[in-house]
Structure formats: structure tokens, C-alpha cells
Length: 121
Image (cartoon, rainbow, N blue to C red; front, top):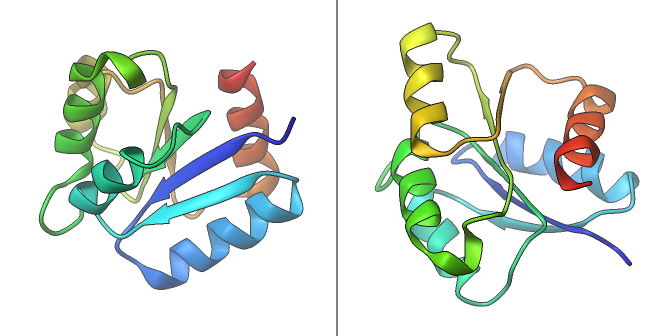
């Protein structure tokens, strides 16, 4: 069965790169432009994994992670943070909010896909 990945990033270029890499790897890809949009997408579907940026307008990745973890329907959905941030305090904040993993941009598609498969297993 095809797994579904929700990517949340305000950069159109990044969304396009993620869609291409994940679709080529055989994933169904849903996309959102920020945390608010991501929560709206979640009302219509349940992804197997969420990949989110941290720095976004309206609702950042921390807010998205916290909101997702408060909802019992998505409490067990793995969340990978994909960001340019490498600050240890922000990484710890994401972990405390409920993030499953942290990947620093730019990403290598093979490593991202391996991480997705690992957390989705």
C-alpha cells in the first residue's frame, strides 16, 4: 500500500523538490504552505509521515507539531523537521513538542527517503 507523506514548507521550490523526490520513491505526496494550511490538510487525510519546516508564516513548525500532538488522531504520526536551522536549542524545542527527527537542509533525497521509511516502519 502506498504511504502518504504530508510536506509543510512555505518555499515553493522546496515543496517542488520534496514532491519530486518523494513521488519518485513511490510515496503519495500531500503539501501545505504553512502550519495553518497543514492542519487544514490533516482534516481531509491522515498521512503516514509529516515533514515540516520550522520557519513559516502564520504558524511555524513548532506550532504545527504541538497542534498535531494534541490531536489524538495524529498523536502517533511521525514528524520529521526539515529546516535550515541547526541550533541545538531549537532542535530540543522541536523534540519536546513531539518531533520524531530533525534533518538539516539542503537534503539529500536518498537520506530523506531512508529517514521516512525508518520512522514509518
